[in-house]
Length: 349
Ligand code: NAP
Ligand code: ZN
Image (tube, rainbow, N blue to C red; front, top):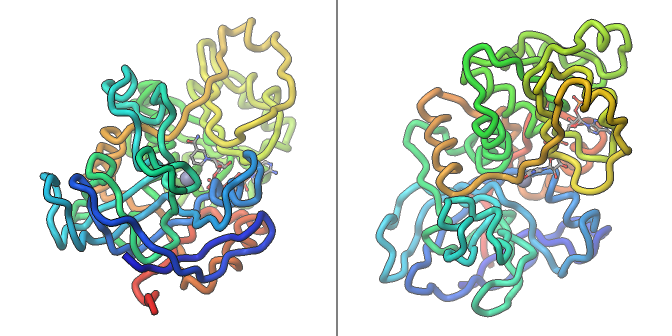
């Protein structure tokens, strides 16, 4: 299928319109017209080469909402007209213990990412959601409830699942004291989801400038990570910290904020961190952990959780021609919401 997207041709080229083809439908494939596509900070990391060399041209985007326009003959779950989503993965081996355990993100053979990965059958490079159409096997397509506003649901497919998964893994419930470092795309979803689970949520930001935004989405308080006395007063006051900071930073500011047995979960920086001092870990049986997105079953669960609790990401909807500007603002202005690209008027020539 002939289609169009916004591709980067090098780490520094910016994104520009690019015509390409989506594969012919395989038996278990779903063809989707993309309506909305979220902008995740991972798109910037990937294209800029922060996580290693990339195949270009590369179309990023792994927060995808659209409508089914065609299905292969073996597809059972979807029909033309259904509202659907695609997140960060489009395939995995489907046979290893992790895939059987519904944790395809930890597939022993490596999952196939929505963009920049090799297709498991043809070796072709996968291309993401900043485009008019996508084709994906039905096991990696998600159902979107009618209760969700499709213009605002896309970020649930990455920012939502990436924060929901550790909240579930560490058993967040009523009264759990959760700290969220960084109030951006992931951070604001962490606040909304943890609050809906009954947790007491504090945003840990680089200043208290985002206090109004934090409280408007359910946080009880905001703590500046640059205010020594506020940090001291907050010592031992969290059971779980979700860390969404996208760059190298230190652990030592945050570890003392955990109570005994508390856990600091890194979901942001992939790569080096400053070396931690071990004393606060040892003295409080505190832990440092990591977490990668979530499996398909859990992604469906967070979509349904959001539908049930009327949780929508805070979205600023932009036109495709504003993508480069939005990338710039994401890096310079650190908004406490997500940019979502409206693909509905993008035309294939
Ligand atoms: P984002 O919208 O840019 O938000 C990041 C937030 O981190 C900012 O709003 C800011 O919050 C804080 N921050 C930014 N620069 C900082 C710095 N130099 N020092 C300290 N804090 C800083 O990004 P996002 O889309 O939420 O993504 C966050 C990270 O998660 C990215 O690295 C992304 O690649 C990663 N990610 C991981 C997974 C996974 O599966 N583990 C999935 C998706 C994304 P304040 O202004 O409040 O300080
Ligand atoms: Zn993402």
